[in-house]
Image (tube, rainbow, N blue to C red; front, side, top):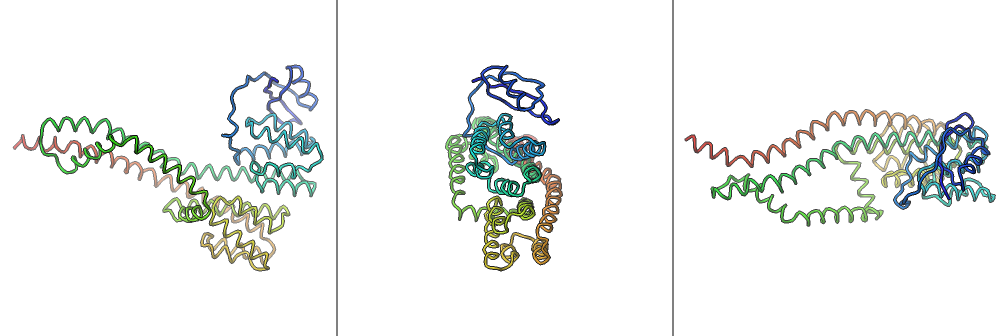
Length: 399
């Protein structure tokens, strides 16, 4: 069945998407039945889609939440909203899930129950918020808050990835330059010096030996690198190893502080939003632990959940984890005592998002010159080592 891509307006809001229909006329008719004022529509030629490689991100969930909220607030029925969302998404994995959820809702299930079948896509946080919105009759406004949350999460992730992208790019370029010099440039000088038969300075001989080793073992080295990456990824699926790794990342110089602030902000933002929207505290803590993204924080939150289940305080396990700064512990404690926990958590999230902004700016200003000096030092050192015999020869001639 042909697929048609379209753009238009619905309830005065710009919308777009794709629709399957037997013909262009049928596609136009179905869109008009939904109240869509069509602006453009054309057939899309199919192609191979590797759905198993598609990953649903926080940005995808932010877009869905925002569009879903807009349509619900405009009075469009949930089933019709789901069909529109399915047709306009570009990811086949998400489109298939939304169509199935639509069928489940049409069959009498609640939206939250239908979403649970696809927990691996939408996650506990999204589903719990939808459930609260359905029960309270405020699905549109709840989805709007969910969209705000995912937009902030996406922005925060973007800042952290942006801060780490530059040093990674410089590191890759450095490795590329070193390999190129060792496999192409250095062997040329090695052949030249071999013809002279002269004794080479120590740094030059060491560089030639390294070059020979790299050339002879280049394929093995690449294979070993891929093996290390593969084994490391598999090892991180082990909870004990992942816990140690996450604890280590929080202590890495420069980057550790940035990761810690990001994790604290996400913890506070998630828990605060869940509590404010009426999700029970024990369920809120369990969901927050699952989306923490760091096993150390996950353990601290689960310990706090156990404490509250026993009638104890939330702050004890957070303090014992060693991850949360004293200010966070103090504000959480004040929030517990005054009954304003969600408000205090929002203040914590706002504060640490600003801290992440400042840390990213500071990191960019510090790491750029350091990486450039590092790259320049390596390349310059290799060039000096290569030309040392020529300098020695020139000095001998002058004497």
